[in-house]
Length: 239
Ligand SMILES: [Fe+2]
Ligand SMILES: [Fe+2]
Picture 1 (cartoon, helix red, strand yellow):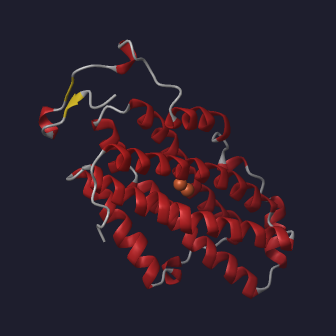
Picture 2 (picture 1 turned 180 degrees about the horizontal axis):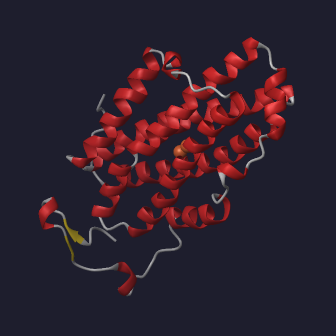
């Protein structure tokens, strides 16, 4: 269903109908709802319940170079997760304004999961690495460009311009580049490195959950971009 709201301006937003009291009801067959139901089953892990006992012992046996490698990698992941937690809300607002209740329901699980990913990596730094130093020294120029500038810029643009074109740009940046290219490959490589060394079982367990969550996020991004490109006339040459 298209918009169920008057979105001419923020002050004039009113609901003109509700899906749940219409003959249509909730669409359980569309991908966002299937992902929502999946997230309720698979996304309920608690970062605080992961056992880091063996990780702490493994950490004590690591060389300085190995510790540096683990901290520098975690420093990229933890603020990346913080960034996607901070920057998702404008997309949720854009989807909500269009009355897409099923997509918003999925996005509530999405945001909650990003918050847990942030908590998980920070817990590793606090309880295993015991590192409370300023870790921004590991954020190079490319990292700055993407996570400090481009990601928030493309996402927060949606507060002013939630056109299909702006949503595609935001989703390509967030779901395709940050999640699909960087997180997917980064977590895969990190997991395999720990697996080969047979170390950090708690960190590995969390990464396993995290990868599963991210696959749902990326699937939603593919759905969103396909919907936007398929139903609207968008000039994709936006770069
Ligand atoms: Fe995440
Ligand atoms: Fe994600």
